[in-house]
Length: 348
Picture 1 (cartoon, rainbow, N blue to C red):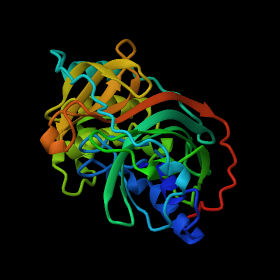
Picture 2 (picture 1 turned 90 degrees about the vertical axis):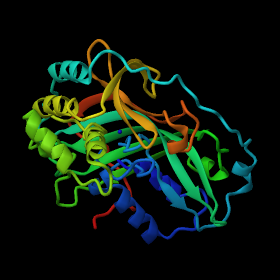
Picture 3 (picture 1 turned 180 degrees about the horizontal axis):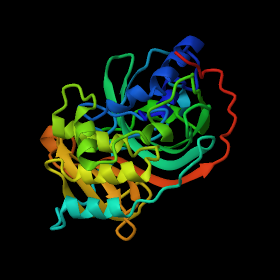
């Protein structure tokens, strides 16, 4: 679930006002694993090139795009502008404890054990908040949706690939869909260059993380979090380690056990992911949004994440609004990654 790299398309509209240098700069920023961790609603979260999407501190991934090119062609502007409440059932805190659910998830972990020369392939579906600032300096919001498949070199030494299929946008609660939302169309391929450095999302890098729950907890709290409160930052870090990555079994088990110790984490027994699957949501509230990580109720495998508004005043959106939603559809191992002819890919 990487910043989102697919947001590059917001910098590459159907018209062509942007230079190749500008496009390359945007791509480098969005595919930098270091950009993985800065994204809640008050502090938006964007997908990284090595990893997705997404729920940040507030549980919603937001990205701001400043449009400096010509106006959107007449075509997209003729689309009907609608406002959808997007309200879902509010989470009901269960008597089940986070320790119980995450403990089961820890005991259920398995490992694909990719070889160093192979690729981890992750397919997902995402929906996040996007903020668009037009030439008139006015701000608009909407929910952008994608289907993504990413190939990550297990040892981080080979070029990876990312396939992004843009889906129909949805209205952010209380806002009309802006014409700019329809600029993202079709399917785009991106090359993820190795750049002579091993990304922190590589399987071999993740294998170096603590396998002890207490040490993993310390790692979560030590991650960069800006001005975000420590507990919120730690919970965000848990999601960051699960999106568009494949954490080895020992580290994943430690991660789930450590996550259960973060204050404010509770259980909701009926949470739906972006693919419509119902599971058990484990989450906490920040910025008026409950950020949940969803597990299969039988296998306790990861299904996805979602962000639901529980405090309208703080989140500045109607209570019950679904402002972020993802689904991890499949995680497999491939011997090779697709070769992508991508002139915009490059190293810093």
